[in-house]
Length: 251
Image (tube, rainbow, N blue to C red):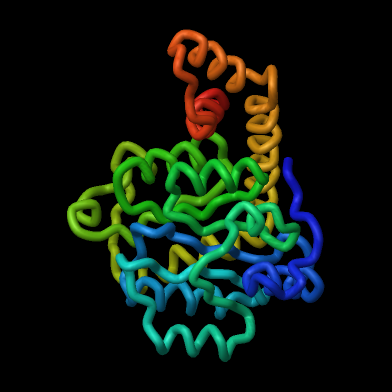
């Protein structure tokens, strides 16, 4: 797996924060939170998330990216995060550098294809908070197939909140969707992430990461399949498709 190289030299606030967290809290201590540029939780859900992190018995530093044009981050939450001295908000990060940094222990993500692949390629387990399109499928693959993360469901809204989650067995798992239910689920998941269950899921994520690098290296399975497709296409192919092929090859 690729590794974070060198000190950030204070040129990037996110990486500087990670350097400090590594010195103060140790390796794999930071929760990295990113929902991409198109999706973001509503303010009331963000409030529950931040409060759950700050209430953990074991202090957990966290790095969170702010929303793009499609979301709003409440000012009072910004103030709460600053006052906590445990978290930092940034408008943009070099995600691959963050995920390869030794301080990063978990990623809380909407499970877009790019972020999911990048996290697993660095052996970082995922707390899945999907919204729509292909994100629930990626979340299901990470949590149920690879056992490399947790899947949050009490945060579902609109039509999804009226259905039962199949992961609860034949009868389904009831989605309550209240702030109290979201908080209870977050408390449970965050505590497990810090303990034995979380360590097991991190080991599975690291195993997936090793497999990804084997697949995408020259003469790896994904590399060879793309080479074969390029030969048939006579036009070449974007290496971006390597992500999809490698992810599918691990299942």
